[in-house]
Length: 110
Image (tube, rainbow, N blue to C red; front, side):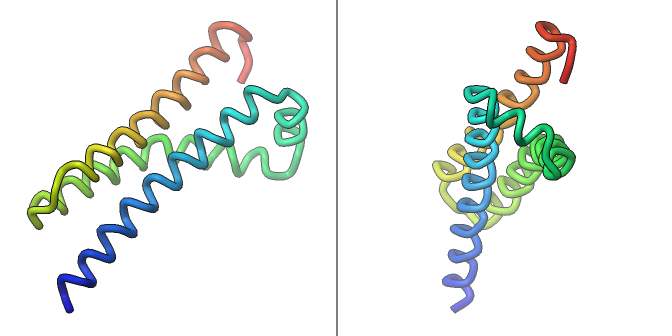
């Protein structure tokens, strides 16, 4: 029973990392591809919440994947799923901070 609970937590952890990173990348891409959508989001009530979420998740997600790696390495779980999680977290990290860098260098605004 303990192994099935641990396995369920592992799968839930992997799913959470991938969903968060995927949703963040999708939201960011929608804002960049559709200026009308960006204007509505940027001028709407969720602007500050989304901005803070993007900042926090771009830092916390890679940290969580590092902790997940240490936790699951001790449990002798395969590394394929951990590498996929790391790819999602690092992709989100580079998309967000790369987008900010691009905005600062090309537009002078964020």
